[in-house]
Length: 151
Image (tube, rainbow, N blue to C red):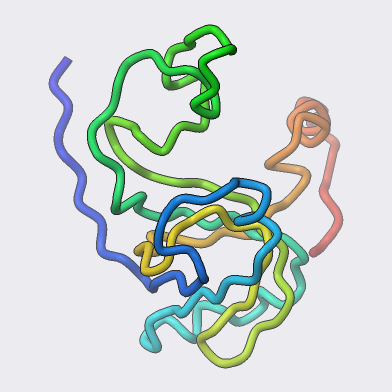
């Protein structure tokens, strides 16, 4: 298999109170601001119609990886392959989290639910849409006559 490397340019940066990893529940319940580069502000039009979005970000502080890890670092849980966990230590340290939008003002999106660290580069954001992103939606899409509702 011949795989070509991929290069990404961040579209923004995360601002939050966590410069170091902390309790995941504490992090996910805190407020964060996604500051999107102003040149992409026009790409935010219509985002206010959605309650949830995916934030795809670079886990910029991750150091290497192991093929098998204890989920959540809990050694009482048997090791699994890293692709069967949400460990931040990955071959391509890319984070993906569904967050709730609380406010959009200009190029800044206030969210809750994010588990990224402060200054994490944002690679992309996408709306969470049940008809694409949930098992229920995947099942509905098997019907050729199915049409999702708008926003």
